[in-house]
Image (tube, rainbow, N blue to C red):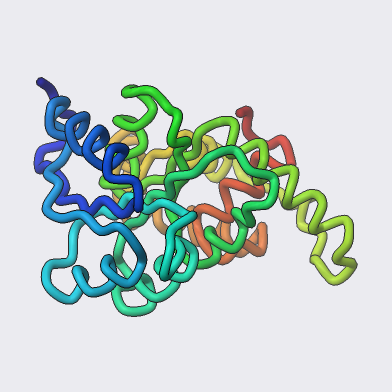
Length: 224
């Protein structure tokens, strides 16, 4: 067993398929990348759990009975703004990933992903970063392009100019690193990195880090 985290995150699993939950719980436990403190089979059950013991991280399925993952994410973030949510999904052209991003999701991982992908996703989001399975990221970018093409009111910020340091911070954010990790890597203070991140958000008209990352990939400022 191994872990790159000084403190294992507490995790709630939300998925209506018991066998899948059991398999994911076993993976998380065996690889020592977190502690599953509770499970829910739908959004309502999950929201009730939050009132008892909020976790460090939620791993949330999209398609569930009673209350789906999108609405459960919206309500959970409204009640707990600092809650970290990783979305479980299958490749599906009908899924509106941008809505999930706007609701507060910090990353997406395919339910068919292997151990390494799940481990990277859990660790990145637990540390305050973001994570996308590459296939999902491509699909989100395609959806964004389609939405932009049909929305003439969307501001054109593709010509935003960045300093060398801002670009360096942007590249590291796109790799899923948190502000603290970037500060350590560049030997700067977290306050300085946060200042660069805020400037990047303003220059790209992005409302949060995950939208900034999507902007960078969509405009080919970073490579998938």
